[in-house]
Length: 538
Image (cartoon, rainbow, N blue to C red):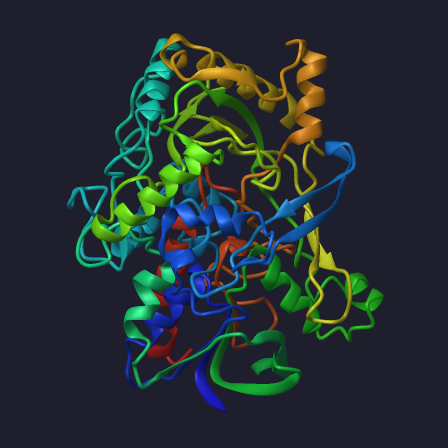
């Protein structure tokens, strides 16, 4: 089978690319996805993300594990990643956060020319259909529905008031002119029409509506194994389905959109990457690129959880389960109610030091008890607050466990490997604790899970015992212009013609917030770069 463009990975970036590139009827596009179609009720009903995130069982989820982390008492971390059309946007909390303009200006300063805030903002706007309407920083008419939560729990308002008592003002728009403050998150959710209240994954917004285009072929439940390279040019993909291999030929380009773990793995399986890593697995070196799999960055997350005195939160006790069933029926009728919740309904961006120019900590306030990615279940009503350091100094890597493409990659986030991160996270934990213990939350606040004596030693021990990812891995195919850059600013793999990487792996550094909206932005801009190169004959 032969196409102009062959895309490996139907997640957030791949869904955008397939939809945008196939807008041109003169080109043919093939999208390869290892998971399913991303249309089921588990994906469409926001509250049912809780059934997927734990990976027990593995529902639309790769459910990766890390290597033991020395900074976390040798524990192996957990890394859920979406496995369906829409990728992680099919299983995440739907939070629409762009980060800070300085993040993107920082990319440009690091050699990602053309990726400064002024260049990126138009692509955020191009993607967005915001229920608030159009303004200088928001737009309507894009494929990605962005909504205000219609019925957040009253405890979220109490959280915002608790933040205000600590001199953190309310912020109605984390994507506005100022990120600092506390408020309710906007979410990627249908806000009108027959799908009102459903999750708007990247597939639901971009891909599903155009699946019948004659020039677009979408193959699900196919594993992209390696890029075929002939005389220094990518000529196609080898994929596997049902134990059989198949070669898909690309006349123009192969594009990897398999994410911060999948894209470097496919490159290395193809002989593109650090020579020592490839030789250790018996893989022939096609193009030595030492930066492949390096520069992994992720947000390490620490959680404070409490039992609730009031039932108007989410609980897995008999009363809570009964309320969930009732809420599911309400959601089917109106698209509203508890089943439409992102769980992380409210949040905040704050500074670890008042003298900083911009926030370096993020809070996610969750209307349920969250313990070990919902893999430890507590039969009680409760609430939680996550805190993470937005711009960590620690760096990790992605490598190979095996030369077999079906084996998971070796993931080493390197959490707390840089000594500057722990004091910042401890400061964030102290600030979060003050908010959680403030009077506005008193009507809900019951016993705290994992209490300790409050000393620095006890807090550090609790962080090392329980902290883990909040699901924002980036950077493993970094764009730039130096020797360790994997792709150039047009996202072309260095040294291999006809091959690009388009997903969160190309980000030089983490953005100051959740990574789904920025990943969609990257793909929107990449689609225009690819179209421009086609027009120029490049």
